[in-house]
Each structure stands twice: as C-alpha cells, then as structure tokens.
Length: 91
Ligand code: HEC
Ligand code: HEC
Ligand code: HEC
Image (cartoon, rainbow, N blue to C red; front, side):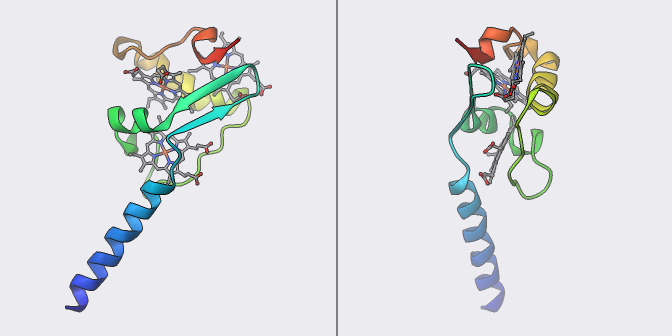
C-alpha cells in the first residue's frame, strides 16, 4: 500500500513538471527566436538537452544561445535542423 502511494506521488510529480514546461519559448535578443520546446522534446527526447530531472536552462545571449541551440543544429542538419541566421532570428 505505502509503496503504491509513493509511486503515485512520484508519477504526479513527473506529470507536474511536464505540465510546467512551456510549449514554446521566445527569445528577443536579436529579432525573435522561437523555440518550440514541445516539438523538440517529442522529436529528440528530454535527455537530448536535460540531464536528470528537467529544469530551467538559461539561454540569454549569443554564447548560451549558439552554444546550446546552434551547436546541436550543426550536428543535425540531416534531420532538418536550421543553421542560417534568419531561420532562427526572425526579422
Ligand atoms: C539555431 C538557432 C540560431 C541560429 C541558426 C542563429 N542563432 Fe543567433 N542566437 C540564437 C539564440 C537562441 C540566441 C540567444 C537568445 C537571444 O539572444 O535572443 C542567439 C543570440 C544571438 C546574438 C546575441 C543577441 C543578444 O542577445 O544581444 C547575436 C548577435 C546572434 N545570435 C547572431 C546570429 C547570427 C549572425 C547568426 C547567423 C550566422 C545566428 N545568430 C544564427 C539562435 C540562433
Ligand atoms: C532541444 C532541447 C530541449 C529538449 C529536447 C527538451 N527541453 Fe526542456 N528546456 C529546454 C530549454 C532551452 C529550457 C529553458 C526554456 C526557457 O528559457 O524558459 C527548458 C526548460 C524546461 C523546464 C523548466 C521550465 C521552467 O520554466 O522552469 C522543464 C520542466 C522542461 N524543460 C522539461 C522538459 C521535458 C519533460 C522534456 C521532454 C519531453 C524536455 N524538456 C525536452 C530545452 C529542451
Ligand atoms: C539536441 C539538438 C537540438 C537542440 C539542443 C536544439 N535543437 Fe532546434 N532543432 C533540432 C532538430 C533536429 C530540428 C529539426 C526538427 C524538425 O523540424 O523536424 C530543429 C528545429 C528547430 C527549428 C525549426 C523548426 C521549428 O520548430 O520552428 C528552430 C527554429 C529551432 N530548432 C530552434 C532551436 C532553439 C532556439 C534552440 C535552443 C533553445 C534549439 N533549437 C535547440 C535539434 C535541436
């Protein structure tokens, strides 16, 4: 009984963290970069970006943005990941 309760609590916790992750995130440092979090997660799995329990990843400037986003895109052009400036930075 107790064991089942703990498992149920864990499942609720996992569901809650998934629910709190935004479907899309917008960055506005240079034009507007729209990150479709949901689509990336479905296509690549959470582990592609998150280690362990998913938590906030700070993307705030060129180093973090290109280090985390563009670096992966360069390795996945065969899967259709965009690498041209205006494919991420709109207008
Ligand atoms: C895979 C998507 C992607 C591509 C392709 C990309 N960038 Fe970025 N870039 C980002 C993200 C994400 C950030 C960080 C978030 C922000 O600053 O809006 C960023 C940040 C920047 C910044 C800093 C903006 C600021 O906050 O001051 C500059 C400048 C920049 N990029 C220029 C470029 C140029 C030039 C190219 C083409 C050679 C390029 N980017 C290609 C995603 C991309
Ligand atoms: C392509 C990389 C990538 C993938 C794949 C990914 N995430 Fe994220 N995740 C991010 C980034 C970047 C952020 C930070 C977004 C922001 O700036 O608010 C984030 C934030 C989060 C947060 C914290 C939200 C907040 O604002 O505190 C959670 C929870 C999360 N992701 C869960 C998941 C789950 C669950 C999956 C798998 C279904 C997943 N992520 C897949 C990149 C990714
Ligand atoms: C682990 C690898 C990986 C990381 C990290 C990653 N991407 Fe992607 N991204 C991809 C792949 C693969 C595609 C092509 C998938 C598709 O469109 O079917 C893609 C597609 C895109 C697209 C075009 C399709 C769309 O959703 O509009 C944009 C824009 C984009 N990514 C932005 C970002 C930004 C911004 C970040 C960082 C916050 C990021 N990506 C992080 C692998 C990654």
